[in-house]
Length: 366
Image (cartoon, rainbow, N blue to C red; front, side, top):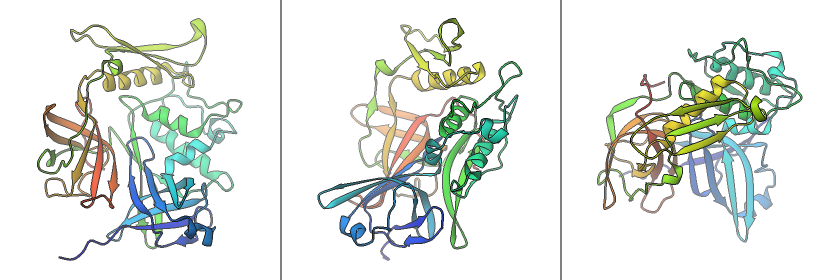
């Protein structure tokens, strides 16, 4: 049997594009994408390597990639180094993390807004265009051309970004994808010849698809007992979302169901949101997360024919069977991200984050 080719870690300067390392010897490597978030990478390095070549890693300016079998699997920005004894720990996050370090200094994303009945996909593209139009701010991120039938901003309450508030661009994107009927995004990377292509994938009505060709099952590819969460302190059938303002001027929207259980409420305060349409969407999404008591939210799997690594993507619904002393769970779960662990004891494995899939529409794989 041919030994598997180990993952290769590469680093590159964010502005010049110059390669800094084509084989960074990271140990305890873990990486993966995330639904509506950047996804993360962590690893460990001998500090002497950095002391011998101080330009090898420069947090905030160094890009990092993982390649496996000739394909780029993950890409992002190194944000944090921590040296303790003879170990250096590294943390990175993918492209959308950069927008958390950028603000709208000009208002309405350089005059591209305000927005009335606008597709949030277009607003997301405008935010990225604005961020990358500023000197030394171009990461080379390409946002998909996906369009949606969702709308943000109304004639009475246009969607605005005010220059004197200098809002964080990443928060603005989060608001556009946090509802129950809003687009999804995830960050990805691929080779374009010999150059990495940085991509933000947009999905409407969602990323991923309901998969009938692969499964996650105890005794087949689930290799550890997953935690089963039953916490009433996180449960609610009523979600009240409140926005910007004080007193009677503070807008609020409520999402609620009745299900024969004692009424429990949760307050979702979002002080940066003004529009009631966004508040209603955020309340509905929060209710979806909180209305189920007892769930399987994380599993660890090995590579098998039941769900080969690389066969699933962020957003997919996978039929999941978990049988142990605590639960007999069978149902559809949606993949919200995963962490690949190529150096795990016993061989490569993936830790997959899941959430209920019932409330989602089902489209094709994008």
